[in-house]
Image 1 (cartoon, rainbow, N blue to C red):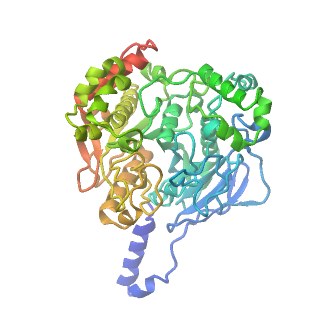
Image 2: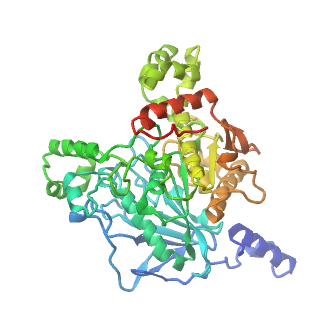
Image 3: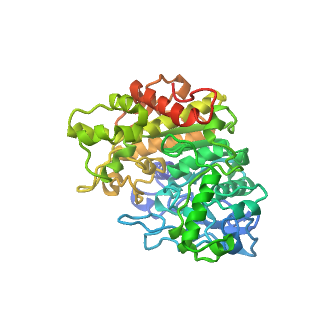
Amino acid sequence: MKLKTRALCAALTATLIATGACTPQTIASAPNPASLLDNPVRTDKGLVSGVPGAVDGVTVFKGIPFAAPPVGNLRWKMPQPASAWQGVRPGDTFGNVCIQPPGEGRVNPATDFPDSPSMSEDCLYLNVWTPADSGSEKLPVMVWLYGGAYNEGAGSSPFSYGDNLAAKDVVLVTFNYRVGSLGFLSHPELNAESPHNASGNQALGDAVAALQWVKNNIAAFGGDPNNVTIFGESAGAAMDAGLVGSPVADGLFERAISESGGWMGLGIAKMVAREDAEKRTLEAAQKIGATSLAELRALPAKEVFNQIRGQGMIVDGWIIPEDLSKTFAEGRQNKVDVLVGSNAEEGSFTAAFGPPMTLENWTKTAAQRWGDLAELGLAAYPANDDAAAKLVAMEPFSDTLAWHMRLFAESQARVGQDAWLYWFKHRPPYDPGAPDLGAAHTAEIPYVFDNLAAPRTFPGQSSVKLMAGNPREEALADLVSSYWVNFARTGNPNGAGLPEWPRVDALGPTEVMVLDADGRSGRGEWISQPRIDLYKRMYQRDVAGPLSLAGPGGAK
C-alpha cells in the first residue's frame, strides 16, 4: 500500500536526512508528493480537471453535474440525466448550493461564509476527493449525505471537506440534494406525471442519481464502484436508512453508516403517508393562490421554499414503498452491513427551547410526553428537585434516538449482515462563554472527518481553537475516522492499534461500543433497562401495533 500524507512526508524526511541528501532546514523546499492520477479524468459526460487538495497527494474535483438542473418543468421531477459537455470542465469551484435559508442567529455552513457558493435551483453537483495515483486502484468509496433537518446543507460545507479521509486511502464523494419543499413535496399532479405514481422524495431521488453516477464513473477516479459506503448525519442518516430500505437503491452501495438518525427520523413514530403529505401541500398552495402544479412551478423558487414547508422523507409508494418499520421488521431491506449510533447528549440543545424546566413542569408534562406510559416514563427518568428535572429533561431525546439506532443495527443483524453500534460520549471543549452542550447532536462530525480545524455545524458548536492541534482531540479524531474508514474498506471497523469493537449481536442488552477520549473507547454501558423497556412499549404502541407487525421489534 502506498504511504500517504503525513506518513509519506515523515518517511521522505527521515530518508533524506539519513542519507545526508539534505538537512532538516531544506526539507521545506523539497517538492511535495503529488497525485499521479490522470488529470483530466474522463466521465460519462465529458472530461473534468482536478486541483490539488489541502493534503499532499489528494486531488479534488469540484462541481461535477450528476443530473440536469431541476428548473422550470423539471422542478419536483425526479433527477434527469445531465448534459454532456465539450472540452475540459474545470473542477476548481463548487457548484451552486440548493435553495435554503441562511442561518438565523447562527451560521449555516452551506451559505453564510464569504466564499460560500451561490444559491440556485440549479444545484445538483457533486465533489470528489481522491488519493489515487491511477484509475486502476479500486479504493473504497465513501459518499456523504449531510444533515440539516431536511431543510439546509450542501456537499460544499467546509466541515465535510474530504482531504483527511481521502488521505486514509478512500475516495470521498459529497453531493447536493434538494431540501425543503423543493426536495420533499407531494402533489397529485406530480403523481400523474410519474411513471411510478409517486412523489415526495425528490431528495432521495437525487441521492439515487448521485450513487448511480458513482457506479458509472468512480473507477476513473481510482474508486471501486463495487465497494461503496454511504454515510450521513441526522437527516442524512435518516436518508441513509431510507436507502437501506429502498428497493430502488438496491445494488448501489455495500455498506451504510448512520450517525444520529434512522428511518423514523430522530424519534419513534410511523412514517408520513403520501396522501397526508399531499393534503398538506394542497392546503399550503391554496393559501398562496397556486391551485395547480403549473402555477407552483411558475413561482420563484425562494417563494415556494418560504411559503410551503417540506415534508421530509415519506412513504411515497416507490422509493419508499411502505413504512420502513414494516420493511425492516419483516426483513425485506437491502442486505448491507451497517455502522450506526448516536451521541450521549443529543438532546442538550433542546434546553434552549420552551420555559425553564422545573420538577413541577417535568411531572405535569409527563402525559404529554409519554401518553398512557407516563408512569413508566417518570420511573425511568426520576427527578426529586428542579436541578435534577432540568438535567433529566434532556435525556429522553438522546435515549429515544439511541434506541432507534440499536433497532436499526439489530434489524440488519437479523438478516445476516454485520452490524456495529456506537455511542459517542466524548465531551469536546467549548469556547469560554459559549453554551457547553457536551456530546451534542453533530458533535461527532469533526472527528469523523478528522477536520478539527473546520467550522462547525449546528448545534454542536465545539471550539475550533481549543481542538485543532490539541493532541488529545486529534488522537480521538484519528481513532474515529480510522473506524469509519476501516468499515468502508472491509465492513469491519476494527484494525491494528484500535480498541476492539464488538458486533451488535455480541453486546449485552445495556452494552454499547463507547467512543471517547483518553483510552475510554470500548465496550461500555448504554441506556438503562427501564428506559429500554419504555421505548419498547412506545414502539409497540405507536408503530408496531398500528402497522400490525408480527413482533415488537426493538432492542434486546
